[in-house]
Length: 268
Image: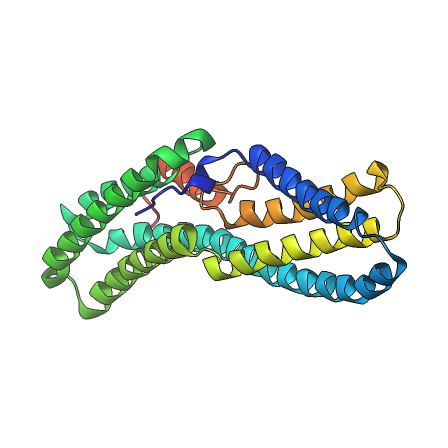
């Protein structure tokens, strides 16, 4: 089940502001500390270390972004796979005899309906309810499959049961990738420490040069890091604020089921 963390409860825009302020404070900390001990030797010694840390931070950022982006792509693919799997199971209900055919058709239609939440603001509130109701329907579908097994040929039974198993498996994958497939906390801790050290060291480097910092350069510097970190956080969150995983395949399936009460049994 989904348990909302503190980060998940915050607006992504508030997270951006918090990250930007934190990075700015890191830079200012390094700048002010160094101004008290500014020498040309410090500036020369700091430059290669600042460059090395910046390269290491860029590497960790690239890994984190790649992990978050790949999980986001998997979530999109699973929505499409689920729509196709449920559609196939719906078609194969035509292999069943009555009353199992109608019962299965109605349950699968209900299954699609509860899994489509078009109002983004409602998704976070309904996610655990959707999981519970989906798994209840899966149990009912399986009971019907067991009851109807003796009335079907082995091939018909296998076709229908395989389609149900695919639906059940994709549900498990969506729960694991969508809700539990997060970037490990160890990577977040490493990323936070490297960001602090890199930004602070850049502040030290600027302060060691004996010149005042330029806001016209410092603000874009802090903002660029903030945007990248915030984007990674957004991609890693199960329930998004601005980057949504499109539900359109399931919406299209739901609309097609509403328009066609009975599937064409020849389209297996």
